[in-house]
Length: 84
Image 1 (cartoon, helix red, strand yellow):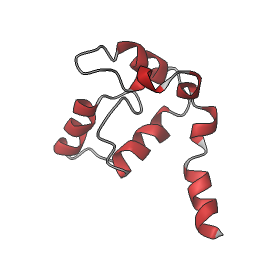
Image 2: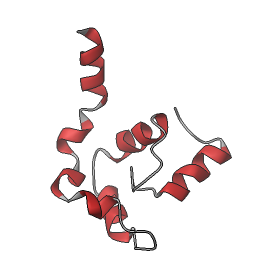
Image 3: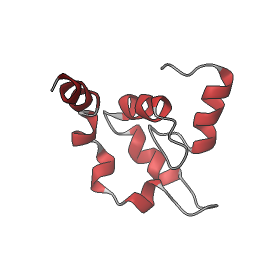
Image 4: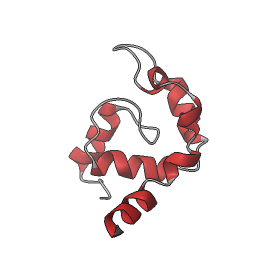
């Protein structure tokens, strides 16, 4: 039961995240499509930092998470600024 509580607390940001109001195609655009609108929505979201931390900790490799694209998150990892 404790594990579920920890998991629930760690993912609580998802309940109020602005991305819940948009479809997944918004954050997982077709290759070559713009991520600008998804990033703008992320930047207005209170859960942005928690979302980014989740994506980095769980090695999310696709889509926009926490306002960053796949390439931008990979650059964070490569540069050693990953705040796991």
